[in-house]
Image 1: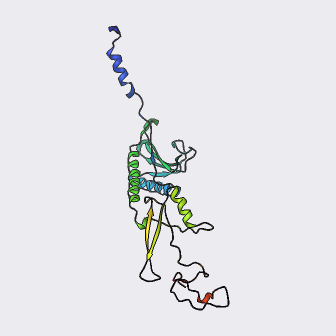
Image 2 (image 1 turned 30 degrees about the vertical axis):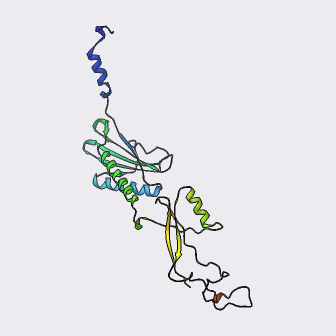
Image 3 (image 1 turned 135 degrees about the horizontal axis):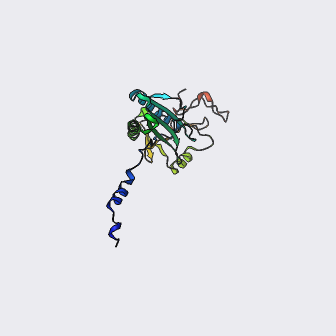
Length: 253
């Protein structure tokens, strides 16, 4: 048991208050994961945040010269922007928005800000919370829109394969987790009409790979379909007459 002379309530009170004694934080830094994987899209988001900050918070864009900027000389950043708001009496507020690659892919936004007050002291920038909220709101809207995209939100690119069969490529893409769409064929009302029904493999997660429907006939040497009229075939040559070759309604001219 500890002797009573060592039980000093004043000392105990001092130890409990010690974590709260000291200088205030001189800056604030926040990191937010970007929903985009490409630099171009992320820079567009930075442009949007900068524009909102300039117009609604009355900041001015700065070229980054001087010793007050934290991210100016940090290596590895994809992009960074500097904003400042001049206050009366020599006081000012700074905001820095930086974009950096994430080790596992994608990008992170970094927000940094502080407020300079009289006497050369610093304190947290109260506008940083507003910029953070605005950025998080934009990211939330992007994520909600991605869950139910409209045709106007989607782009496309046509890839022509060479020396490889389409079905084999689709098999490889399915194996690594891509969403693919193929079509099943059924007979239509006439010999030349077909009904194609899409079949999706995997969840809808862009990019989605869609297989083009193969042409009914891709070679001039293939015979015409059963029951179709073939005209102009020469009986004296192994090669059919191109001018009279029947292409199974697969070409427009």
